[in-house]
Each structure stands twice: as structure tokens, then as C-alpha cells.
Amino acid sequence: MKTLFFIWAFVTASIFTINAQEKEAVTLTIDVTVTKHHKGAIFLALYDKEESYMHKSYKSGQGEVKDGKVSFVFKGVEKGDYAFSLFHDLNSNKKLDTNFFGIPKEPYGFSNEKKGRFGPPKFKDVKFHLDESTTINVSIR
Image (tube, rainbow, N blue to C red):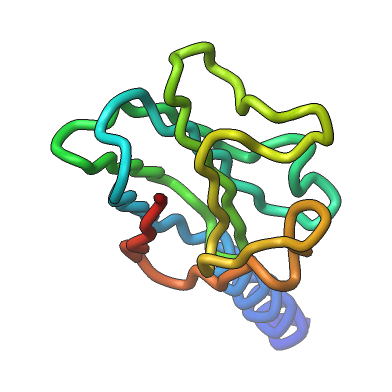
């Protein structure tokens, strides 16, 4: 009976250890370099699921462009797959301005520096795997 209890305790402890490792949090830093307009703010949305991509962000941030750069630091991010989108708000109205056809008039970008055709790129094209604290560099024109 004692042996059975110790086996059960060992298996249970192993499962909890595995789950704790999967939920380990890391830090994601996204450094944005602005190459053309050195004014306004960058708005960034981080997505953790394909279902919420371009609809509801997991985390988000806003930063004023200073010396052509903006940095976003997200602490406590669980390991896994992520994607982000960003835009450069040139006129400080806190939204991505578009023309009559819905085409953005302000600079924008996505993780992996992908561009979409007839809309944003697919999640599978912009996702990246995060398994340790990482810094991603991206440029926006």
C-alpha cells in the first residue's frame, strides 16, 4: 500500500512540475525603429491566439517616437506562439487612418516583417515562438 501511495505521489508531483515548466514566464522586448517620420506614436498589439488575432490583443502598448525609436517590454509572458501588429499614428488621433477603400494611410507592420495582400497577413505567417526572454527588432517606414 505504501508503495502504491509513493508511486501516486511521484506521478502527481511530476505532472505538476511539467505544468509549472510550461507556464514559465519570460520577457518579450520589441524594439521599433522608425525610418521616415520621427514624430507621433507607435501603437502595438500582441496576440497569443489565432482566434483573437487582429480582434482582441493579449497585451498592448503605446509609445512616443523619440530619436526614431520606441521600445515595448512585456514581462510575465508565458512561453508559446505569438504575433504582433503595429501602426505609426502620425496625426495623434489614436487610430490607424485609412482611405476610402480601407487601405491604411499611416505606416503599419507585423511580426516577421510580413505584409498582407488584400488585408492583414495570416496568423501562421506572422507568428513566432517564444521560449526564452527575447528582443525582436522591427523597422517601420
